[in-house]
Length: 376
Image 1 (tube, rainbow, N blue to C red):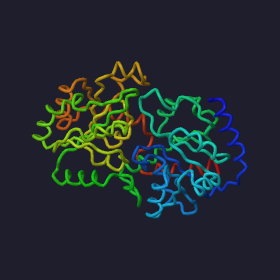
Image 2: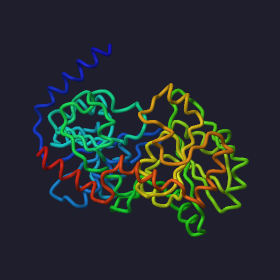
Image 3: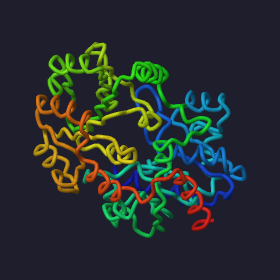
Image 4: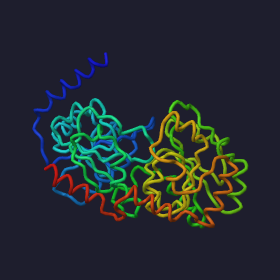
């Protein structure tokens, strides 16, 4: 059955490759879909917004995951169509350039045809999974944030592609760049909460654990021991933001506390600049946060199990630029210590140099210039 599906996909792909293309039309395809709809986020979003505002000779079209998402974007002034509507399919077939930041899905592959395929990457931290196998078709151009990240990605995934080190378009936003529609994709209640916390001069801590494959429930109360942590947060005027993977989203309302808030799935990149301390484990969020040179705590309470099940590409203890905590008690102590005495600045600088060759806000421009120079 799988072989028959592949034959069908490749047959349709070849048949549709005869459709005429325009290098002035670029199609953008995001990857982040939740039960509540698509999240407008990541590198495709910020290259799309850059082109929309600064490269008026190009027609950027966002191929949305639902009709409602596309309609909402059009009502705000962006050009977007449902990817499987007639208009969406037309632009998918007409685009001379197609831009993605994850694997190309089956039916997107069908419509890509002879379009130049640009891969911006969702992010590459320490996880062994992801970007390890070739896709349904070769990329024409892959844009990396650094030589270090390029070396971590499989040659099979990148075969036959032009490779350019440009930086991530989303890094522009982390570093303070803004576009007209940057906040579209950010939850309004979250923005209001952060604004109020900053008004009160509250230190904001963000806990962003990664997804555990096969794990159906993420017991936040047990993992963090919130009943013990909460008094410390209140006493020191700290506030803990927790963002769980969308598959755990039903657990977001299980705990109510004035110093703890669960955040819905959204575009987090415009929010990085307001965070004082990041707590994570194996997520690539720490690589983006490095750009701000602020404390990071690594909380790999299940390190051995995660390494066995998922695998990581680095020596965890020596290459993660921050203190490690393995129990809730160690975590509680480390939070207070890092917000009063940041002890890992040198390690963060080394890590930043590995994951980012650029620390300016010209990443989207470099990507655009690479596409036009190398492919058009």
